[in-house]
Length: 339
Image 1 (cartoon, rainbow, N blue to C red):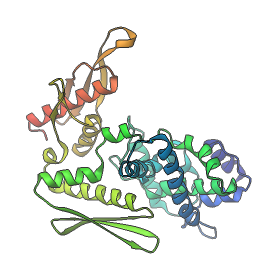
Image 2: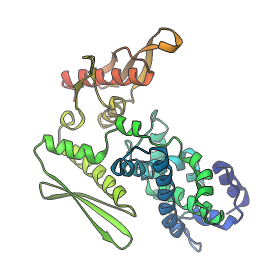
Image 3: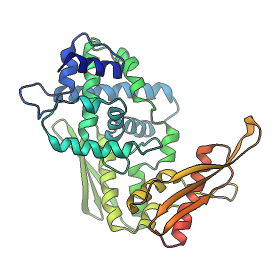
Image 4: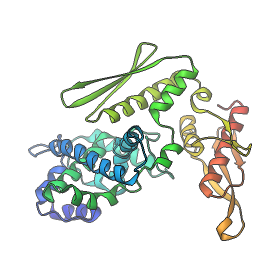
């Protein structure tokens, strides 16, 4: 690999390698002939990032129980999360390969990510190509080896690349796939069973609904395999269940107003499923002193029947006001039988 390309990657990640060969190997796909691929580095990087993030979460959230810590770690090292890191820093532009189909998958993913306006904890409208997450893990391993296997030094270098980290608040805003799978099937009177076993170094999770196989996924970590299997199962179930039953879960807020958890995210997904343009949000009202600001936001979407616009309740944060508008939009679509 040319020295200028290696320097471009070093500039992107903010680290100068002593052993440039490590970085070159970390960016080499197995399809590239007569070269060492990133597979061994990716193997190490998967474990190293998992441990580094585990350390961070353990110290950052001393009151979280092990189950919540596992969910948080899985969200921060998921294929979707790491693939977006690769895109953000342009690492996909430097991968050496001889696999043209990879380019098309990556290009589709890049286009979708460019339209996202929120943190994606569990995956967006297009499945992230695994190669993107692989190179982030392999580059992490290359850095880890280059700093003489010092985990703390790796974290100092790599943490900035992973920002914004998925937080407990983010997980509350975006329903966790395993939880969502159980809730949806429970409402439909169906029983979910997720079975685990190991195949060599890989942990495999398989989802069964009413005793019938639905989906399976594998990973070096059990919780990530479970998470990925649940996401695949949800996508398959979405094809079988009506969108209204699959997507909606309304409730009343403490003040009696209508609320909807993670409404912006769900409206975004809904527009994608319907092949509509992504929602556009605007601040309609901004009032009050700086320390007590109140906002009213609207959301507008272009459907096959025309432009729809809906305003939400007054909220103290723009994000909450946008979620309120999205909530009302989803309810309006349901009442108009557009779901």
